[in-house]
Every structure is written in C-alpha cells, then in structure tokens.
Length: 106
Image (cartoon, rainbow, N blue to C red; front, side, top):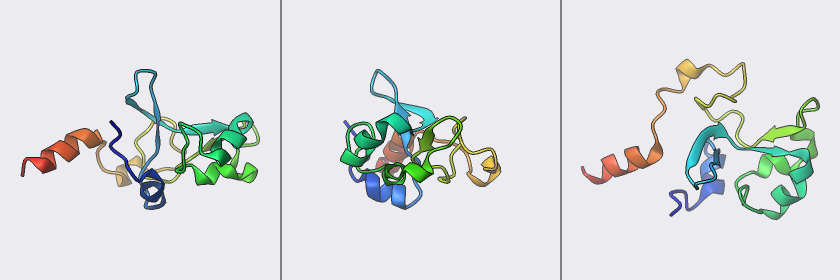
C-alpha cells in the first residue's frame, strides 16, 4: 500500500521524497538518482515515478559524484540532506503512517 497517492504534487509542495528499502518500507534517506539513471527518471520509472522532476535535467546532478537529490530543500532530517540545511527548522521527524493513523483516531 502506498501512502502517497499524489507524490508529484506532494514533492512540489515541499514534502520529502525518500528512497525505499528492499522490503518496500520507506528509508530515512532522501531519494537520489545517478546520472546513468536519467532516462529512467525522465520516463517515470520506479522508484522515481512522476515525483522526481528535478532530476530530469542533467544540470541538477552533482559534478563530483554524479548524483541528483529529488528533493534537496524539503526540510528533511535525512542524513544525506544538504550540509547547509538547518535541521532545527524542520521540526521533529515523524513517520507519516504514525501521524496519519493518529489523526484518524480523533
């Protein structure tokens, strides 16, 4: 089951796009694409789908490591967030399923 039904719109509104673990669960690492995957990003292949528009442009890939972060300025607590990101501005990290189901009980 996917919690994000409209991921592209969520990303456009500042929601972080995280990578997925082998077991299908969301990791705490921001989703990145390698320059060799740019055609997969452009075609909307999983895991990028339509939510990683930023990485469709080769200019958004780091020259040193060849990586593009789909949501670099999303307010993430992820360990691979940009160095200049101020985590104190992000608030506390909460798994979205916990927040979602907590709201359902009210």
